[in-house]
Length: 268
Length: 268
Image (cartoon, rainbow over all chains, first blue to last red):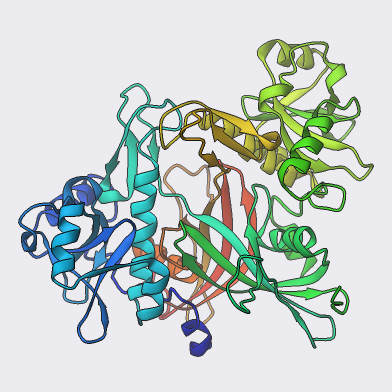
């Protein structure tokens, strides 16, 4: 794989360890492990305010990690904390929403709250993907306080990796939603041109590859063909997967493809 | 692309036209178009009962399409009908749930109701993907009668392509959920072996490629690595996308990859 190409994605490889052998695989062992780590004094929290992530300059832009004890009160770790992974030095890391009093307290300490897109542009290595995961999960929790099946309240479980209906007759468990999106660069049959789009709302001279949400009952390759016919009236031959990245606005999986047009591309 | 390989997927290319120029792109034009076609006498309906699809033998196994007038009453087309696409002969096609009386009436006419997995095994060309789309959408509607944000009732819009909260203060619109899953064949470093898994619940000698749901904040390639570490303790080098297909149990996008193990695979 071409390292430069992978580096060009905004949300590259995640910076925390998210799988064994240090984390129990599933079930009650995992639940117990998460609960004990959530209240461990070494555990690190990444605060979010209004879906913006806490950052400071130190001197470079840096995520602001704190411990539960760093904030005498106001760190609402019980309900909204979501597990992110384990750091290189073996410490469990969570993200949490904070209240306005805590946000003001942190701002006095020169901690700012930055939207995920700007944060990703300022962060290198695996930290942008941490922001992507945290923002998607916290947003999902805030948007799902009620059960889709019976309308009762839901509550978080397993340190934020799922929610369950509080009605014992229903009890349905729901998992975070990820919406697959195809984003594709159309290349003309002669290889000389490519097709980019411009949304009237885009600033300046910004153009973009065409993209669209996948629909039930289609493959990645079919979604590329359908979207290109719908959006641009372009028929394509071969569709080739290129790479993928999470895009937490709010919880998208961007699936990048190349599509070879059947004809030369004509500008109309 | 290798035709034989694509044909090996259970839910290949969709058999109905789902994009322009015969279908308005979006907004009120589309809504009007869908409403007028939903009640058009030529429109075809594919009935579902308990998420099984209507099929008959004619003499080969065939989807059972009917018209609204074919069923004097009981065809509940108003609330549950979902738009599937346009047939080769230009007719709009919908899927709909039916009530028990209609189901009994159809069974007398030798129409059976077959689960989607069995139906896919019996159907060729694009019909299995139609079943996948219809089953995913109908199941999604049945599982989402309430708003996740405020707990009020939701109702279908745009011929089943979305639902909206009926509470005017909320009014949130929700779209069908698709859950991306990575499924991967691990190949040993020497290219001599591959890794398959066996769930204790599998019948007979059935084995399967390893698979798992993607999580927020990761790419396809990272999900493959994480799942293989979690499920099998195997580290992999290169991950290569192979192909994808919808898998409507209940609404999965299966993303097939090859993964090259760092070592030889040892059976333990």
